[in-house]
Length: 141
Image 1 (cartoon, rainbow, N blue to C red):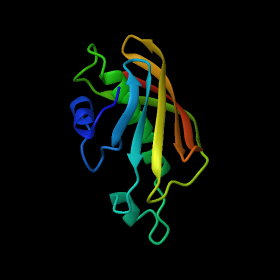
Image 2 (cartoon, rainbow, N blue to C red; image 1 turned 30 degrees about the horizontal axis):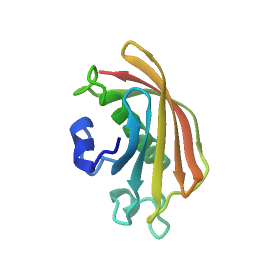
Image 3 (cartoon, rainbow, N blue to C red; image 1 turned 60 degrees about the vertical axis):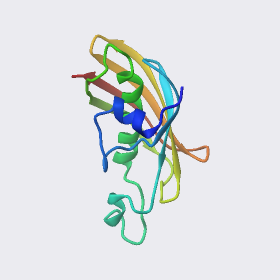
């Protein structure tokens, strides 16, 4: 199932400039999905990170992954209209710089749910190379 930007906005509470998923290529509610973040030269964070050598901050790569995970979670009717919050990020590894012009592929899987609490894994790639991988825990508020 694909989602456009407007369909993403109907699921996520995030808005520009902090909406970090541009499209969803495929997803299954409560299971997993693949999304895309197009990294543009005019992104707000490149003005200061780093002038003359723009690099997408790792924390925003993990946020992109978390937003993709939230789409997978919040698209389920029992969680629609809610907000998912990080409770932990573990084993985060950054393996490749993400720079203007890159297309960040966001691959997430929800691995376990216990009531409002859950766990997931995520990998962000650029042209098949791993840029970031992490394990997440979250709560639905």
